[in-house]
Image (cartoon, rainbow, N blue to C red; front, side):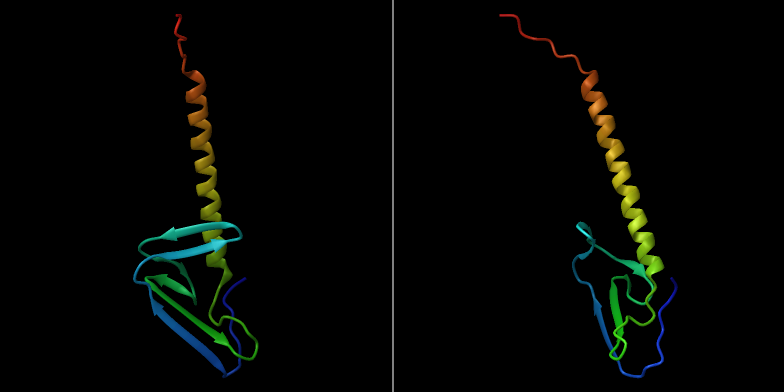
Length: 103
């Protein structure tokens, strides 16, 4: 999609430095990082979060959804890896032979 810009001069900017944990979510999936915010152009990166909003057109200025799309793709990849790991554990459990106690 690319970076969003606007021609208006009424903007609101808020900045912050994360001191503890950064949490973000996509739909019902949540990701938390104790150290850093994800790198999203026009929004956050490292341990800083900054948002500049146009008060006339109500958009985040300088924001690019491309970076968010990359984060979501990484999240999808992690979930696929977790699913593969669970499948491998299930296969290992199937290979175990349990002897029954004959009393």
